[in-house]
Image (tube, rainbow, N blue to C red):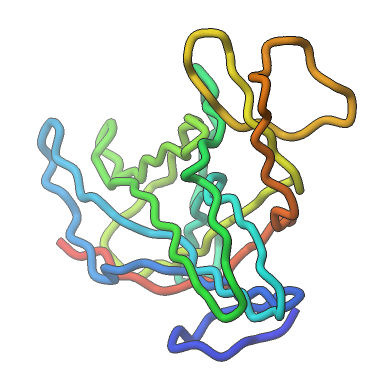
Length: 201
């Protein structure tokens, strides 16, 4: 793991792939203590392929970590899920050598039982909560992961087509006659370097 060139001061490079934290708005206003009052926050990760070969990436499983100024992690609660969601074809991105992609997701600050929390639902439909926040400076970094190098298209018989990890053994007859496969997907778990942001009244 080493640093790589970027306009962002906090990228890391792993095997020729550059990862960096992205948070477009770095000064965020705390919402008023009113029902349904929220402050929306976009955050995510920028991935750059600095290798000589095309690489596939799954833009699906990413979540934040928050740090206080003393570098202590903010409390987190999750994952909590009532259902599960599989990736779709649009969640995969082929990056040619030198190309970049920015994967942004969204959460929000809101008041819950007189405490300022950050709520976030990952694309796999798991819920996460972070808190307790107050005005001041914090840092955010991103946990990005994909454990499977190959994915295949599956039909669930109700017209819904999703992608799931490819298995060595053949599946039963619920797959369509022509199976769409995505292979050589980047595998790993990345903890990006943190970026500071401010919460203000």
